[in-house]
Length: 360
Image 1: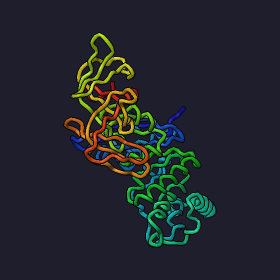
Image 2: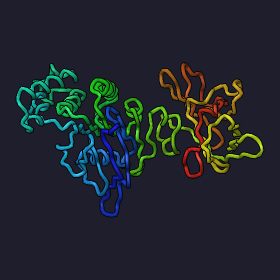
Image 3: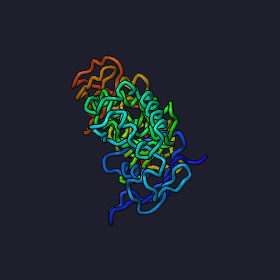
Image 4: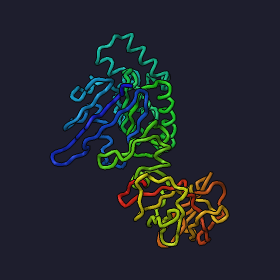
Protein backbone atom coordinates (compact mmCIF):
# COMPACT_ATOMS: atom_id res chain seq x y z
CA UNK A 1 0.00 0.00 0.00
CA UNK A 2 1.32 3.43 -0.97
CA UNK A 3 2.16 5.71 1.93
CA UNK A 4 0.22 8.95 2.32
CA UNK A 5 3.41 10.68 3.48
CA UNK A 6 6.93 9.33 3.16
CA UNK A 7 10.14 10.93 4.43
CA UNK A 8 13.29 9.40 2.98
CA UNK A 9 16.80 9.93 4.39
CA UNK A 10 15.88 13.44 5.47
CA UNK A 11 18.64 15.73 6.72
CA UNK A 12 18.13 19.27 7.99
CA UNK A 13 21.13 21.30 9.09
CA UNK A 14 21.98 24.91 9.81
CA UNK A 15 25.66 25.28 8.97
CA UNK A 16 27.53 22.81 11.18
CA UNK A 17 24.49 22.16 13.39
CA UNK A 18 22.42 19.15 12.32
CA UNK A 19 18.83 19.12 13.55
CA UNK A 20 17.66 15.95 11.77
CA UNK A 21 20.06 13.32 10.39
CA UNK A 22 19.03 10.65 7.85
CA UNK A 23 15.44 10.24 9.05
CA UNK A 24 13.02 7.95 7.23
CA UNK A 25 9.38 7.40 8.13
CA UNK A 26 6.26 6.22 6.29
CA UNK A 27 2.76 7.33 7.30
CA UNK A 28 -0.13 5.25 6.00
CA UNK A 29 -3.31 6.65 4.44
CA UNK A 30 -5.92 7.54 7.11
CA UNK A 31 -3.32 7.18 9.88
CA UNK A 32 -3.12 9.56 12.84
CA UNK A 33 0.59 9.89 13.63
CA UNK A 34 1.79 11.94 16.60
CA UNK A 35 5.31 13.36 16.77
CA UNK A 36 6.12 13.55 20.48
CA UNK A 37 9.19 14.75 22.31
CA UNK A 38 10.70 17.48 24.48
CA UNK A 39 11.34 21.02 23.24
CA UNK A 40 14.17 21.14 20.71
CA UNK A 41 13.89 17.49 19.64
CA UNK A 42 13.10 18.39 16.00
CA UNK A 43 9.41 17.46 15.82
CA UNK A 44 8.17 20.86 14.57
CA UNK A 45 11.14 21.07 12.20
CA UNK A 46 10.11 17.73 10.69
CA UNK A 47 6.49 18.86 10.37
CA UNK A 48 7.55 22.11 8.71
CA UNK A 49 9.74 20.18 6.28
CA UNK A 50 6.74 18.05 5.28
CA UNK A 51 4.67 21.23 4.89
CA UNK A 52 7.32 22.96 2.78
CA UNK A 53 7.92 25.69 5.35
CA UNK A 54 11.42 24.40 6.13
CA UNK A 55 14.21 23.93 3.58
CA UNK A 56 15.81 20.49 3.67
CA UNK A 57 19.53 19.82 3.31
CA UNK A 58 19.13 16.43 1.65
CA UNK A 59 16.62 13.61 1.33
CA UNK A 60 13.09 13.55 -0.02
CA UNK A 61 9.50 14.22 1.06
CA UNK A 62 6.72 12.34 -0.75
CA UNK A 63 3.00 13.09 -0.37
CA UNK A 64 0.35 10.91 -2.06
CA UNK A 65 2.96 9.27 -4.28
CA UNK A 66 4.50 12.55 -5.48
CA UNK A 67 7.95 13.88 -4.67
CA UNK A 68 7.23 17.32 -3.21
CA UNK A 69 10.67 17.98 -1.72
CA UNK A 70 11.01 21.31 -3.51
CA UNK A 71 7.35 22.16 -4.11
CA UNK A 72 5.75 25.26 -2.59
CA UNK A 73 3.48 24.63 0.43
CA UNK A 74 0.36 25.52 -1.58
CA UNK A 75 1.19 22.80 -4.12
CA UNK A 76 1.71 19.95 -1.65
CA UNK A 77 -1.94 19.05 -1.05
CA UNK A 78 -1.83 19.67 2.70
CA UNK A 79 -3.80 21.67 5.25
CA UNK A 80 -1.96 23.02 8.29
CA UNK A 81 -3.10 24.17 11.73
CA UNK A 82 -0.61 26.23 13.72
CA UNK A 83 -0.10 26.75 17.45
CA UNK A 84 -1.34 30.34 17.16
CA UNK A 85 -4.82 30.87 15.76
CA UNK A 86 -3.49 33.38 13.15
CA UNK A 87 -7.01 34.60 12.35
CA UNK A 88 -7.69 37.85 10.56
CA UNK A 89 -9.19 40.04 13.32
CA UNK A 90 -11.30 42.26 11.04
CA UNK A 91 -12.81 39.36 9.12
CA UNK A 92 -15.84 37.35 10.17
CA UNK A 93 -15.56 33.60 10.78
CA UNK A 94 -17.09 33.06 7.34
CA UNK A 95 -14.44 35.20 5.65
CA UNK A 96 -11.62 33.65 7.69
CA UNK A 97 -12.74 30.20 6.56
CA UNK A 98 -13.12 31.20 2.93
CA UNK A 99 -10.04 33.42 2.57
CA UNK A 100 -7.70 30.80 1.12
CA UNK A 101 -10.37 29.55 -1.27
CA UNK A 102 -11.05 33.09 -2.50
CA UNK A 103 -7.34 33.65 -3.08
CA UNK A 104 -7.28 30.40 -5.08
CA UNK A 105 -10.24 31.80 -7.10
CA UNK A 106 -12.55 28.86 -6.61
CA UNK A 107 -16.13 29.36 -7.85
CA UNK A 108 -18.33 31.21 -5.36
CA UNK A 109 -20.81 28.34 -5.08
CA UNK A 110 -18.00 25.89 -4.30
CA UNK A 111 -16.60 28.20 -1.62
CA UNK A 112 -19.99 28.59 0.04
CA UNK A 113 -20.59 24.83 -0.02
CA UNK A 114 -17.18 24.05 1.54
CA UNK A 115 -17.59 26.70 4.24
CA UNK A 116 -21.06 25.41 5.09
CA UNK A 117 -19.86 21.79 5.34
CA UNK A 118 -16.87 22.71 7.49
CA UNK A 119 -18.88 25.02 9.76
CA UNK A 120 -21.43 22.27 10.38
CA UNK A 121 -18.69 19.72 11.09
CA UNK A 122 -17.02 21.99 13.66
CA UNK A 123 -20.25 23.42 15.10
CA UNK A 124 -19.43 26.89 13.84
CA UNK A 125 -22.55 27.42 11.73
CA UNK A 126 -24.11 29.80 14.28
CA UNK A 127 -20.88 31.82 14.60
CA UNK A 128 -20.17 32.56 10.94
CA UNK A 129 -20.88 36.29 11.21
CA UNK A 130 -18.83 36.89 14.37
CA UNK A 131 -15.31 38.24 14.43
CA UNK A 132 -12.45 36.49 16.30
CA UNK A 133 -12.64 38.96 19.23
CA UNK A 134 -16.20 37.74 19.88
CA UNK A 135 -15.15 34.10 20.16
CA UNK A 136 -13.77 31.99 23.01
CA UNK A 137 -10.32 30.40 22.76
CA UNK A 138 -11.81 27.04 21.85
CA UNK A 139 -14.01 28.57 19.16
CA UNK A 140 -11.04 30.42 17.67
CA UNK A 141 -9.05 27.21 17.50
CA UNK A 142 -11.96 25.48 15.78
CA UNK A 143 -11.97 28.26 13.19
CA UNK A 144 -8.21 27.73 12.69
CA UNK A 145 -8.84 24.00 12.19
CA UNK A 146 -11.72 24.80 9.86
CA UNK A 147 -9.53 27.01 7.70
CA UNK A 148 -7.39 23.93 7.01
CA UNK A 149 -10.37 21.60 6.52
CA UNK A 150 -12.03 23.74 3.81
CA UNK A 151 -9.11 22.91 1.53
CA UNK A 152 -10.44 19.30 1.41
CA UNK A 153 -7.01 17.72 1.07
CA UNK A 154 -5.81 14.24 2.04
CA UNK A 155 -3.17 15.24 4.61
CA UNK A 156 -3.55 17.56 7.60
CA UNK A 157 -0.67 18.80 9.76
CA UNK A 158 -1.15 20.07 13.33
CA UNK A 159 1.62 21.97 15.13
CA UNK A 160 0.74 21.94 18.88
CA UNK A 161 -2.76 23.34 18.17
CA UNK A 162 -4.00 23.05 21.77
CA UNK A 163 -1.04 24.41 23.73
CA UNK A 164 -2.52 27.91 24.10
CA UNK A 165 -5.74 26.64 25.68
CA UNK A 166 -6.56 25.94 29.33
CA UNK A 167 -6.81 22.34 30.56
CA UNK A 168 -10.59 22.02 30.20
CA UNK A 169 -10.61 23.36 26.63
CA UNK A 170 -7.65 21.14 25.71
CA UNK A 171 -9.57 18.08 26.87
CA UNK A 172 -12.70 19.10 24.97
CA UNK A 173 -10.91 19.90 21.71
CA UNK A 174 -8.78 16.75 21.96
CA UNK A 175 -11.99 14.72 21.87
CA UNK A 176 -13.28 16.81 18.95
CA UNK A 177 -10.09 16.24 16.95
CA UNK A 178 -10.34 12.49 17.59
CA UNK A 179 -13.96 12.48 16.37
CA UNK A 180 -12.98 14.62 13.39
CA UNK A 181 -10.39 12.09 12.29
CA UNK A 182 -12.86 9.24 12.69
CA UNK A 183 -15.42 11.08 10.53
CA UNK A 184 -13.07 12.33 7.81
CA UNK A 185 -10.56 9.50 7.63
CA UNK A 186 -7.79 11.81 6.41
CA UNK A 187 -4.12 11.30 7.21
CA UNK A 188 -3.15 13.50 10.15
CA UNK A 189 0.31 14.31 11.54
CA UNK A 190 0.20 15.99 14.92
CA UNK A 191 3.06 17.58 16.87
CA UNK A 192 2.87 17.86 20.66
CA UNK A 193 4.98 17.72 23.81
CA UNK A 194 1.94 16.54 25.80
CA UNK A 195 2.02 12.78 26.29
CA UNK A 196 -1.70 12.65 27.18
CA UNK A 197 -2.56 14.11 23.76
CA UNK A 198 -0.20 11.63 22.12
CA UNK A 199 -1.49 8.55 23.92
CA UNK A 200 -5.17 9.39 23.40
CA UNK A 201 -5.07 10.65 19.81
CA UNK A 202 -2.47 8.57 17.99
CA UNK A 203 -2.69 5.41 15.93
CA UNK A 204 1.12 5.46 16.22
CA UNK A 205 3.53 7.68 18.12
CA UNK A 206 7.01 8.66 16.97
CA UNK A 207 8.99 9.66 20.05
CA UNK A 208 11.87 11.97 19.10
CA UNK A 209 15.06 13.06 20.82
CA UNK A 210 17.82 15.19 19.29
CA UNK A 211 16.41 14.77 15.79
CA UNK A 212 16.24 10.96 16.01
CA UNK A 213 13.13 8.78 16.35
CA UNK A 214 13.66 6.70 19.48
CA UNK A 215 10.56 4.52 19.03
CA UNK A 216 7.74 4.36 16.50
CA UNK A 217 4.84 2.19 17.64
CA UNK A 218 1.25 2.10 18.82
CA UNK A 219 0.59 3.92 22.13
CA UNK A 220 0.01 0.71 24.12
CA UNK A 221 3.27 -0.81 22.86
CA UNK A 222 5.26 2.32 23.77
CA UNK A 223 3.72 2.42 27.24
CA UNK A 224 4.15 -1.28 28.00
CA UNK A 225 7.41 -2.01 26.16
CA UNK A 226 9.48 1.19 25.84
CA UNK A 227 12.45 0.74 23.50
CA UNK A 228 14.98 2.47 25.74
CA UNK A 229 15.49 4.38 28.97
CA UNK A 230 14.63 7.73 27.39
CA UNK A 231 11.24 6.54 26.15
CA UNK A 232 10.54 4.78 29.44
CA UNK A 233 11.26 7.92 31.44
CA UNK A 234 9.47 10.29 29.06
CA UNK A 235 6.16 8.41 28.87
CA UNK A 236 4.07 8.09 32.02
CA UNK A 237 2.96 10.38 34.82
CA UNK A 238 4.45 9.90 37.32
CA UNK A 239 7.45 8.66 35.38
CA UNK A 240 8.59 5.06 35.49
CA UNK A 241 10.58 4.02 38.58
CA UNK A 242 14.16 2.88 37.97
CA UNK A 243 16.54 0.72 40.00
CA UNK A 244 20.19 0.29 39.04
CA UNK A 245 21.69 -3.18 39.42
CA UNK A 246 22.98 -6.25 37.63
CA UNK A 247 21.62 -9.29 35.82
CA UNK A 248 23.22 -12.50 37.03
CA UNK A 249 22.63 -15.83 35.34
CA UNK A 250 24.68 -18.40 37.24
CA UNK A 251 23.46 -22.00 37.01
CA UNK A 252 19.76 -21.37 37.60
CA UNK A 253 17.19 -18.82 36.45
CA UNK A 254 18.56 -15.30 35.84
CA UNK A 255 18.08 -12.78 38.62
CA UNK A 256 18.30 -9.02 38.95
CA UNK A 257 20.11 -7.72 42.03
CA UNK A 258 19.95 -4.11 43.23
CA UNK A 259 20.73 -2.92 46.75
CA UNK A 260 18.23 -4.81 48.96
CA UNK A 261 16.21 -6.16 46.04
CA UNK A 262 16.58 -9.53 44.31
CA UNK A 263 14.12 -10.39 41.54
CA UNK A 264 13.71 -13.76 39.82
CA UNK A 265 13.66 -13.02 36.06
CA UNK A 266 12.26 -16.36 34.89
CA UNK A 267 8.94 -14.59 34.14
CA UNK A 268 10.57 -11.85 32.05
CA UNK A 269 10.69 -12.01 28.24
CA UNK A 270 14.31 -11.24 27.31
CA UNK A 271 15.73 -10.02 24.03
CA UNK A 272 17.56 -12.90 22.29
CA UNK A 273 21.04 -11.41 22.72
CA UNK A 274 20.59 -10.23 26.33
CA UNK A 275 23.54 -11.13 28.54
CA UNK A 276 24.39 -10.74 32.20
CA UNK A 277 25.93 -7.51 33.41
CA UNK A 278 24.90 -3.99 34.49
CA UNK A 279 21.20 -3.27 33.97
CA UNK A 280 18.38 -0.94 34.97
CA UNK A 281 15.04 -2.30 36.13
CA UNK A 282 12.07 -0.08 35.27
CA UNK A 283 8.56 -0.44 36.67
CA UNK A 284 5.53 1.84 36.53
CA UNK A 285 3.78 3.07 39.69
CA UNK A 286 0.59 1.14 38.86
CA UNK A 287 2.53 -2.11 38.42
CA UNK A 288 3.44 -2.25 42.11
CA UNK A 289 1.10 -4.18 44.38
CA UNK A 290 0.67 -2.75 47.88
CA UNK A 291 0.49 -6.11 49.68
CA UNK A 292 3.32 -7.71 47.75
CA UNK A 293 4.18 -10.38 50.30
CA UNK A 294 0.60 -11.68 50.21
CA UNK A 295 0.90 -12.28 46.47
CA UNK A 296 4.33 -13.90 46.85
CA UNK A 297 6.05 -11.13 44.88
CA UNK A 298 9.52 -9.65 45.48
CA UNK A 299 8.96 -6.64 47.73
CA UNK A 300 10.50 -3.17 47.88
CA UNK A 301 10.25 -2.02 51.51
CA UNK A 302 10.22 1.65 52.38
CA UNK A 303 8.46 4.48 54.23
CA UNK A 304 5.83 6.81 52.83
CA UNK A 305 7.06 10.37 52.29
CA UNK A 306 4.20 12.00 50.36
CA UNK A 307 0.63 11.05 49.43
CA UNK A 308 -0.91 12.79 46.40
CA UNK A 309 -4.71 12.26 46.19
CA UNK A 310 -5.91 12.35 42.57
CA UNK A 311 -9.62 11.73 43.11
CA UNK A 312 -10.22 8.22 41.75
CA UNK A 313 -6.68 7.17 42.68
CA UNK A 314 -3.64 8.37 44.59
CA UNK A 315 0.12 8.45 44.06
CA UNK A 316 2.13 7.39 47.09
CA UNK A 317 5.82 8.34 47.19
CA UNK A 318 8.01 6.21 49.43
CA UNK A 319 11.71 6.17 50.27
CA UNK A 320 13.63 3.02 49.37
CA UNK A 321 17.30 3.04 50.43
CA UNK A 322 18.61 6.32 48.96
CA UNK A 323 15.90 7.03 46.35
CA UNK A 324 12.22 7.93 46.09
CA UNK A 325 9.78 5.63 44.27
CA UNK A 326 6.11 6.06 43.37
CA UNK A 327 3.17 3.71 43.80
CA UNK A 328 -0.29 4.30 42.29
CA UNK A 329 -3.28 3.05 44.26
CA UNK A 330 -6.94 3.05 43.28
CA UNK A 331 -9.75 4.20 45.56
CA UNK A 332 -9.43 5.74 49.01
CA UNK A 333 -5.93 5.65 50.46
CA UNK A 334 -5.39 5.73 54.23
CA UNK A 335 -1.59 5.78 54.17
CA UNK A 336 0.17 8.68 55.89
CA UNK A 337 3.75 9.99 55.72
CA UNK A 338 5.98 7.78 57.87
CA UNK A 339 3.94 4.59 57.32
CA UNK A 340 5.90 1.48 56.37
CA UNK A 341 5.05 -0.11 53.01
CA UNK A 342 6.41 -3.11 51.12
CA UNK A 343 4.86 -3.11 47.64
CA UNK A 344 5.47 -6.12 45.45
CA UNK A 345 6.74 -6.12 41.86
CA UNK A 346 5.26 -8.21 39.04
CA UNK A 347 8.32 -8.78 36.85
CA UNK A 348 6.19 -9.71 33.82
CA UNK A 349 5.05 -6.07 33.63
CA UNK A 350 8.49 -4.56 34.23
CA UNK A 351 11.19 -3.45 31.77
CA UNK A 352 14.92 -4.19 31.80
CA UNK A 353 17.48 -1.97 30.07
CA UNK A 354 21.13 -2.73 29.35
CA UNK A 355 24.18 -0.58 29.96
CA UNK A 356 23.59 1.21 26.63
CA UNK A 357 20.03 2.12 27.66
CA UNK A 358 18.28 -0.17 25.17
CA UNK A 359 15.57 -2.63 26.17
CA UNK A 360 16.76 -6.14 27.00
